[in-house]
Structure formats: C-alpha cells, structure tokens
Amino acid sequence: MDAAHPRSTARVGINPIHPMLVHFPIVLFTGALITDLAYWRTADMMWADFSAWLLTIGVITGVLAAIAGLIDFIANPLIRAQRAAWLHLVGNVVAMVLAVVNAFVHTRDAWTSVVPTGVILSAVVVIILLFTGWLGGSLVYRHGVGVAN
Amino acid sequence: MPSHPSAIGSRRFASFSFAGALVLAVAACSDNGGDPSAQVGPNPNLPPLQQYLIPPMHVAKIVGWQKDEKPSVAQGLQVQAFATGLEHPRSLYVLPNGDVLVVESKSPDVQPIRRPKDLVMGWIESMATSGGSNTQESNRITLLRDANGDGVPETRSVFLDHLSSPFGVALVGNDLYVANTDSIVRYPYKPGDTKISAPGTPLLPLPGGPIDHHWTKSLLASQDGSRLYVGVGSNSNITENGLEAEKNRAAIWEVDRASGRWRIFASGLRNPNGLSWEPQSGALWTVVNERDELGPDLVPDYLTSVRDGGFYGWPYSYWGQHIDPRVQPQRPDLVAKAIVPDYSLSSHVAPLGLAFDTGNSLPANYHGGAFVGEHGSWNRQELNGYKVVFVPFSDGRPSGKAQDVVTGFLNSNGEARGRPVGLAIDKSGALLIADDVGNTVWRVTAAGGSS
Image (cartoon, rainbow over all chains, first blue to last red; front, side, top):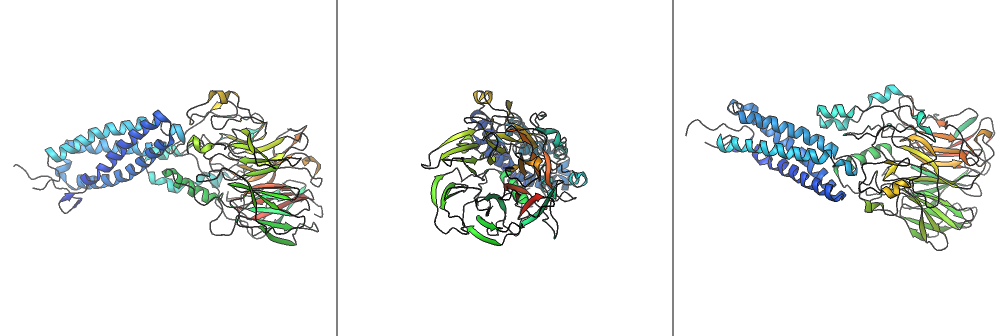
C-alpha cells in the first residue's frame, strides 16, 4: 500500500462518527419524499404530518452529521486535499439549506404544505443526496478516509 | 386603532431564529400590512394571498392591569371594574333578576401533538392565554349580584363548578343551559339562586376532543324558548387536522330544546361566537373568526347575519368565492353558493363577543347597534383588535363605520393589560366586558350617570 489513510478527527475509538450519523438524514429525507408523494396522491393529512416529522428530525440529525463531518474536513489537510471532499461538503450544505426551507414549507397548513413546493424540494434534496452520498462512498472506499491503517 | 409602531416593529419571536439560515431571515421580514380601519365595513379590500415560511407572528406580552389602571372609553362613557380577581373570565350572561354570570373557562386539557408545528403553536397560544392558566381554579361560573345598582356587587358566589371548558349560557324559564366544550347540560334554576348544587342533566353531546381546536361553544335560546342555537368552531385553522375532524363543525347548530334533536342551521362559519338576536329584525347574528396565515390583511374576521341553511365558505373559500388553495379536494359546488358576510371587522381582530345595545341607559347613538369584543391578533406584526368596537345599525343592518368604544387594553408599549372577550348588556343597560387576561369584568355606563 502507498500513503497512510487520511485520519478522521471526530471518532469514537477508531471509528469515525460522521459515517454513523449520515444514515439518519439520508433515510429520513428519502422517507419524507415518499410521504410527500403519498400526500400528493391522497390528500390524507396523515402523510403530510409524517413528512413534517421526518423533515424536522432529518434536519436535526443532519446538523449533527454535518458537525462531525466538518470537524474531519477542517482538522485534516489530507481530507481537504480531496476534490471529492469539497464537492461532498458543498453539495450537502446545499441539501441541508433546502431541507431547512422545506421543513418550514411543511409548517404551512394542509395542501400547500406539500404541493407543489414541498414535494419538489423533497425530491431535489434526495437527488442531491444521491450525488453527495456517492462522493462520500468514494472518500471512504477509494481514498480510505477514516479507514484504519 | 392600536398603533404603537415603535414597540411592534422591534419584536419578533426569538425562538424562530434557531433556523439561522439567511434565507429564513429574509423570509421572515414580511410586510406589516395595511391600515386595518380601511378593511372595516361591508366591502373590505382583499389583497392577494401570501404563503409564508414563517408567518408574521406577534402576540402582545402580558403585563396585566396595574393599580388604578383601567381601559379608556369613548366620549360620553365611563368605565369601572365590576369584578376583579377572576380566573380567565371568557363570557357573560345576565339573568332576569339582574344577576351576572361570569363564565371562567380554560381550554380542554390535552391537545394532541400531530406535527412539530403543534408544539410551537401551543406555546404561542399559552403566550396569549387564550387557553387560560393551568394552575388556577377555573371551569366554573361565578355569580355577581349588584342589587342596588351602584356598580359594586354585594354578593359574589361560585354558581356552578367543575364544568368542562364552558362558554355559552342560556336560561329558558327555570332551565339553565350551559354549553361545555363537549356537551350541553341543563340545570334547575330558581330566581334568586346564588348557587346550583343539583347535578346537571345532559341534553346532547357536542363535538369535543380528542382534537378540540376551537373549543368555545356559544349558546343562544330562541325568543320563544323552543330552540337553542350553538356555535361550534372548526377543528383546525384550515383542515390541517383532516376533513374528518371537521364533521359537524364550523357551523351553528339548531337544537330542539324538548327532545335534544339537532340539525346544522348554517355552516362554513370557521369559529362563530357571540350568537345574538338583532333587536329590530329578530335575525340571528354572529361574529366569526376567519382563517390565518394568508397575510396580515387576510382573511377579515366578520359580523354577519346568519341564514337558515346558509353556507359561508369555510374551508373552501373566504369572503364569498375567494378560493383557499390549502384545501383539497375543493368543492366548487359549495364555493358557488358561499354567502358573502355582511360586515368586515378587519383581519385577525379575533372577535369573540357580540352584544346589541338593547338597554336604555347608554347614550342614544348606541341604541340598537352592536358592540363587538375583539380579543386581538397574533398573525400580523401591527397588532389589531384588543378593543371593543361599536357598529351602528339601522333597519336591522349595519349602517356605518365601526367606532372604538373601549380601548387601552394595550399600554403604550404595545403590551397587553387585558384582552376583551365576551360582552353583555346588564339589567341597567350598562355594557359588561369579560377580560380574560386582566381577569376582570368591566362595566361601561353613560358618563355622569349615578350607575
């Protein structure tokens, strides 16, 4: 093997925190897209209520994941040297800002809490997360970020 | 007109700043709305509707009445506290012998949290004390007797206790009806009673929990005593708790007093309160709280006559045929027949009390007109309402611009010393005002008069 893997700074033992947390916002925001689509088709408020919870908790866990990720990014120049890390960061910041806006769109009452703005934002966030999630995978599985030597 | 621009512009809900994002800060800077007085009358200007990330919110901070403070009244009137130290007094009823019943009520205990927003809105409502404090005795009716008419009750007693978020009261003969949030209950009453200890007899259930968004049930007996009319408010701002939760709500019910059978008398009335008979025409009138979160000048709350079988728009449309895009599926058939209300009181004033001046002791210009108790706004930056206004009537219809009659519920810093709710005309013809923040009943009489 060539150079040592870039170390994670925010970790428990040797396991980095960021990859433990990212599943929550990714799954919650994906769930919100599904429940938004269900509300759009049924007008049953139960689905819109689910979306509001999924988005709110998605934002909270997303902020926690972002903190861990930012610590890794800022503390290690080897990570900052990766182009994929920059794209991963910028993409996820955009996704989080849109998700926060979306959470507020979902505080509206009834139909316009979802249709059309809410469901469009939910879809855009999921599309961005597909891209940034792939980049995150590249950082770990190709560049070995946070992987023990 | 409440106008304290210095205090109002500076205050915003700090708790929303957690969002942090610049986008939201920009979104929160909504406009302050126009001059509310321009919206008062039969043909209010309706601006285009707006939808928000964070709707404008401003509830007057509660400071209470300091010693010797009292509301201001229009020229020719004077005001005194009739009773103080009450617990969230919300409505008033005058018995034939002149005794005054003060309904002290708090909101039903548990409101389900269906989504994150409900946590925030619950907190805002507690700021406005529209639900009452949870620590004090309430949900009772207090009787006040001022036999010598000097404006100071000699007798004060707990008339009925342990009620279930009561609001409306109506007496027919010796039957006293109390509209709890979830039922109408009949009690035996004899003239002169200061306390009822007999158990009540349920007449019929009303839509209550588990969701019970607009919980005040206004009550009015027909002039012949055969029927009761009940105001049943909607279970949401605008159907966000689902259409099923709105069954038989946003309506005025007509109840047959003998059998308890009922029907929907009129519908599409989001939160009707203060049901009253207009003295000249004998028609049923009500004040209605309209929907929120469409802008500082939408939707006007109103005063209207109520037609048998009439539909007034909620939730599908407002002020006639203006569609509300938040409601799906829409009902064009109902929107087409939505009646335009008679008289706009301007947006977000929250009218909860209505009393026609049927007495003879207030100045002549008030005779036959309507007093309206405006609890006050939360959904606009510039506060609106927080006062009692007078709408002149002639030939059974509103006949002019509403005038401020009792103001000063806000101090010069825009803080709430009190908030008016239910109104009544007492036996002497004076105007009584229930103040649920000041925990006071105010009594307004002609200036210079002995009573």
